[in-house]
Amino acid sequence: MSLKAFHIFFILVAIFISIGFAAWVILGGAGDQTTPGMRFMGWFSAVLSVCLVFYGVNFIRKAKSIII
Image 1 (cartoon, rainbow, N blue to C red):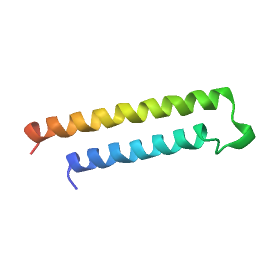
Image 2: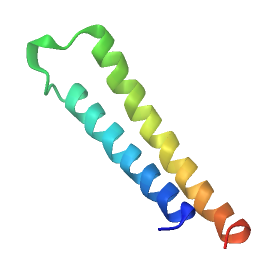
Image 3: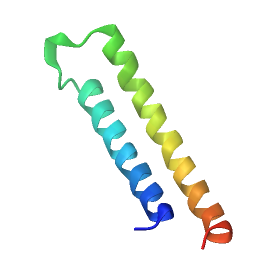
């Protein structure tokens, strides 16, 4: 596996984990144990996943011309 492929794989894993955590917290998977700090981290994770998507798309675009 090339470094480029590993980086794309790692970005995808990070996106899925952050979306999963955000969905778990925001949709109430933690039940009554959800604290305001957990809600903040859930929303932060949702924003982070959107940023990771933009980063991944940008990386793929630039990697086509830079990395073989």
